[in-house]
Length: 283
Ligand SMILES: [Zn+2]
Image 1: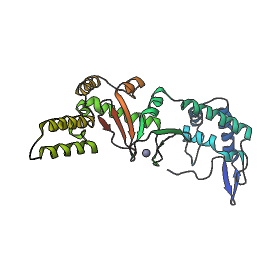
Image 2 (image 1 turned 90 degrees about the horizontal axis):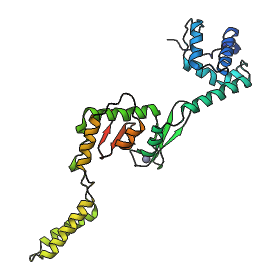
Image 3 (image 1 turned 60 degrees about the vertical axis):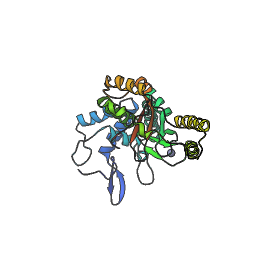
């Protein structure tokens, strides 16, 4: 497929960019239709229906071609490009486009929730969501670890739904591995050593040992992330009865998801309320 290198509406003659009369009429038509309220797709369809050639006998218009045209400031003219569109018309089209994309970017309840529970896989800091140009959202770590992920809301939501579907199809994945949970703190190690020392005495003081055992048990207990088996069973039971067609709604997310982690390689981990984690295949 050949790619147009000269901007639609222009020709190059003797090294100079000049207006292509026929094409420039189409450009004007596109801008005025858009300013009248037609959508990008409407306009693409109209041009296709009228067999308007885009390039080398090809009639290939879509909403992206129209979108790029409307955003291209060269049409108002500069040192190289002669004017096709008046700045007034250009600005009118731009205003409409901005308004439309603002509307589309209006946060859904799901995105509002995700803003609160999405964290950085590298440092655990909160991920911020920033709107950038037109189509993509930029999620970045607010903790200053320089993790920046460009990701569409729709892709993020899809990954979370995929993870959720994985859990629906295989609820056993929601089991928490008990052995991965125990991580002794320095205090626990100290208590443990103290107990060993007491039991290593030639003359064992039973009251000191029993006190030490209780103390150690307490410290150990505190450094276990308590796996509530009942919660896991309930979660498995409820999730296995769900079916997610497209994306998760806010209520389901709130009910079952504790956290979403954006990994530095772009993969998305869904952390369920019982701390079980499921990561999607990758971006
Ligand atoms: Zn980070």
